[in-house]
Length: 211
Image (cartoon, rainbow, N blue to C red):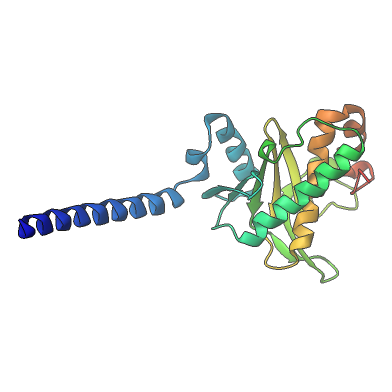
């Protein structure tokens, strides 16, 4: 009987190990799946838009500790997730100060973190930015010859989505970019008049809009 019990325990142990290995393989396989396959059908359009704007392929989808959606091309760093939460926290606080109530939940926002096209600005300062084709900025101080460098860009209002550049330090700057680009989304849903006045920086103005 002891031998039979031992054999049964061994079979159960092997079965448990096989299940664990299968779970690990499944987890690794999921990490390698494109972001568009992981998000809901309605958001696949947003992933496609972000990839079109940035030229990146986004491979990872996760959430911040506070529940914001984050989609990245490389495995997301914990500092990035904290920066997203910090930026949205500051944004929501100033929005509530202005009496805004709509779209002030972390889960309302999807943040794409893209590969920067430069990491230094013209003065040599650390400035991870993404290059975007922006005809409306032609002739402005931002024009780089048919495109602009931007630290971030809000590009979808439903769902609320924006792009920021990957940072390897100065994560407070990254949080600020999330907060500033998020202003456009909050204004769209709460103050359409001010949104229209401040949406296009080629006509002047900058961030922060809400103070």
